Image 1: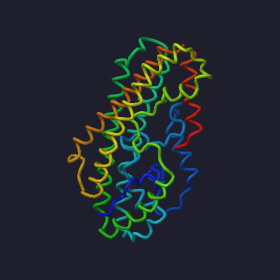
Image 2: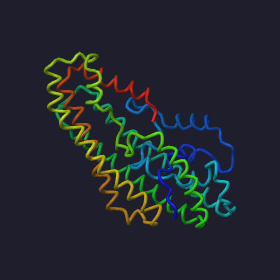
Image 3: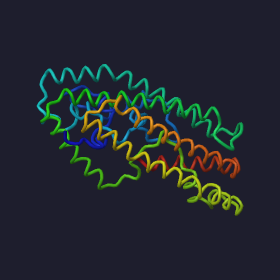
Image 4: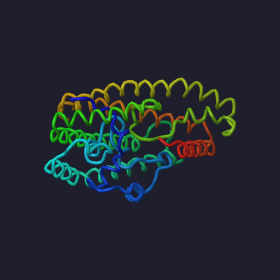
Length: 307
């Protein structure tokens, strides 16, 4: 089977969940409905893509139903009436569970974000409550992604060899165009959080850092957290690629990929824990006013940067 690589670039999950097959789409109305359904927006993720952001692998796996039902070139597939009916039924059966799962994960992430903004309790390291939230988020994202993998497999099994080849061709063209624009990170983190070291280094004067604070940040943060987080992301990327290729090109099941999914969960949990430790360590170096200003700067940068 031809590769269907990073097909999320080709079609949003919003379109897949909210549109009816073969009916013209009012994207503005669909997005408004999904925004209302998503509810509260995190200051750390103002350009949220709900529910896509709440999958374990939101960037490197295709949303196969959307590609065969709603992609601009899906009409070239020549789907039979029976195929369309079966695809629409798959969508109807899974829509509610996807949205429910995403909302549950989002609520956990919002709780974690509020803990990171709180000035109560011991903030020298990740707390038990934070750790439990990270573990719960990781588990729920894994389950949602396993359901996603099964959906990809079910769609593939409904298509002929020629139809699968056509999907691979029109997705491949869009993917190559996306690569030319350059994507900063191929791997999405488990939870969307601000990058404190980067924010502080770019805003030393605004934050009015003392020399002692700058020295501590250099010694205790700059030398530790960026290498750890970037190194872990480098380890996660080939696992995501392996899972993607195994599902799309080798027809592997979620059971076949259980060990790889667990390994990916462990790495993304490690990244999030290191990220939280970095924020907590910075909390002990900055004043409360400086820390809050750092979070506000990070939130404003997120608003300006649409991903």
